[in-house]
Length: 239
Ligand code: HEC
Image (tube, rainbow, N blue to C red; front, side):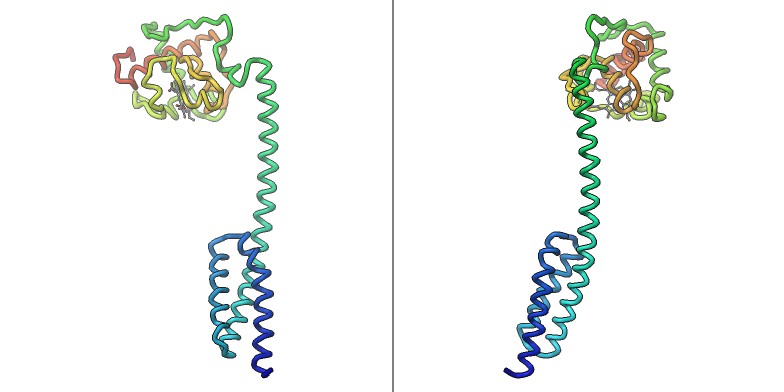
């Protein structure tokens, strides 16, 4: 065996060991830059097929480059793995929290307990409209009131001011009660009345306690929303 062949075999052996070790890690990391390094390895192997010292040295350098990339990949992969572990920890924490919350809620009638009309309650507004003007004026006032939320928002922050209605889905074009995605997804309610929708937005986007059932605040806001609903649907309204 010539000296040349021997040298070549050693280099190839080294290259193969590095590639064999590197490839699975690269596959693991699967990042753009790292995949580039893997493509570089293929080129290095192709180089080796035409044996000249120059190309072998080139191949070897490629392999060393790949080994460095592998080091980085390993670091990244570990970093990601740790990050994931933390994220999983949080997710588990949340899941447990939710499960507990649901379990508690269930004994009182499900996640909708706080936002669904309680038994025996009858609203002090009409859901077909014709509510007193003072009630609507009070509802409008509350619609702009940031003190209702715990996060500085008012209903108008998301739903628009000066009659420029926004943030509503097409379900809002139907008179109450009707189906609302947020109510179904977050509270398991197949349809909602205007006062229930006010409570849902109080609890979820406004991050506040629900209003007291039968309070003038809830009654006024619900009456106001009945008219906003008509306005959004392009029907005659009292606003
Ligand atoms: C952070 C944004 C945000 C705030 C603040 C907010 N809402 Fe909403 N609201 C939404 C979103 C999002 C929807 C759409 C829900 C859906 O259709 O699934 C919605 C939908 C509604 C609907 C219509 C749902 C329907 O189709 O019938 C009403 C009524 C409503 N909100 C009232 C209020 C009231 C009253 C307040 C203040 C007490 C308020 N919202 C505050 C985000 C908000």
